[in-house]
Length: 489
Ligand SMILES: C[S@@+](CC[C@H](N)C(=O)[O-])C[C@H]1O[C@@H](n2cnc3c(N)ncnc32)[C@H](O)[C@@H]1O
Image 1 (cartoon, protein in one colour):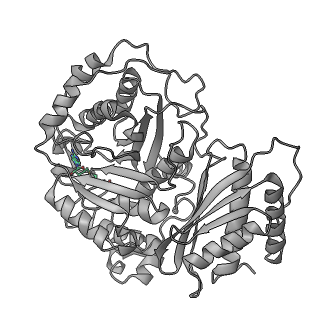
Image 2 (cartoon, rainbow, N blue to C red; image 1 turned 90 degrees about the horizontal axis):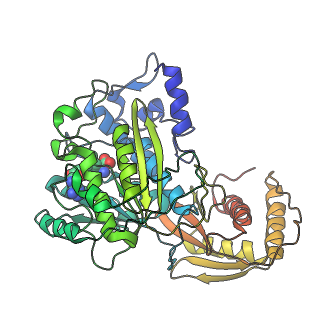
Image 3 (spheres, rainbow, N blue to C red; image 1 turned 90 degrees about the vertical axis):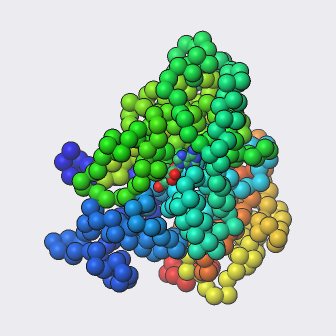
């Protein structure tokens, strides 16, 4: 592939909310800011690092996590070193899945997303990114002592997110239990067909007979438990994610002569490779069903992707989704499935009418606290007549607004914003059945001087989702103009 073609493809597949979508890491700037990174950067003819040097890729990841995410991070020599832009893509894809209308909404909407990272590694990259970018909670599991020890260290080095992340050891003596459970499971063969497909929604399913046969006919995974036996009784999660050991042997893993991202046999290899590993995840999911809203995994080989998709349809899932992650010369796929009943069969790759939205307030003035931001939220929304209930202990404001209130809020917002040069035009729409727009705004402390503001609609399929996004955008402009050092002039 020519460089130009590769760049175009990469730009097309990097998630638009990925911090690096518009601005790839600036090596020269990072080298000027972080002396420890300097020796790894050659500035001529253009700033670059030697991707075949493990120390250089590790230092790049360290400074990117620090500079862009305020995360303190390290891994010992030889452990798998993640690339931050690539791992961020998986997080944003999950964010899209969670905010889409594909499957039914959770009954209890505590507003807090809970994820389960299978094989979090020494780098613990997904929980760290998910917690710092989006305030998500995580259980991160692993089997090796080195992974568990360093994942713990990486969590402890970041007190602003450490409360959100639990590192859990997989007891590898309990595989017998999960195998027993698998053998006794009765598999539901019924499979709903999604007739309306869009680019990446997979299907339709093959006609089905029964899955036990399928489940037991291929090369099986023999190794520590993955989900069954690790998930505790009564636990529920919004999603699980996994960057599995892709290969059957280190020979197969090979050494990419163009990069050096480390990776020990324990991280890269398992009997049967990713096909067997993810097949076991699928078998676990048949037992655990709605314990997870979404089951997801990264896939390294396209041939495995099609194999796993057809396997999924045969075991009675309600929906399968895929995506493609491209990072430099590496291409991976994301696979997601669910047993929840399907709500609506839409999906554009990047959802427009979202029910959960968020933004960061960075560079806050010293006197601004999470509480004062909540008060500003209350002020902004109640001036339009909306009813607002501020809860100072959960750091939330619950809002209920009629269509007229929404219009007034947007008008007020537009006046406020006109002072700053931007403008919102509010037009009266056709009369609609009156449905109040109910949503919650939550504020999370990230690091000193930075807050995450999240808005979640109470009813995901609310017809007012578009209005919600307008109001939330207005709120973002208002809070930024009021509270951040760099005001729009
Ligand atoms: C390819 S690494 C991924 C590490 C990290 N999540 C990342 O994306 O860089 C796979 C990890 O899975 C772990 N692992 C292997 N089998 C496992 C199991 N049954 N349960 C949990 N983790 C497992 C390995 O120890 C390794 O840390």
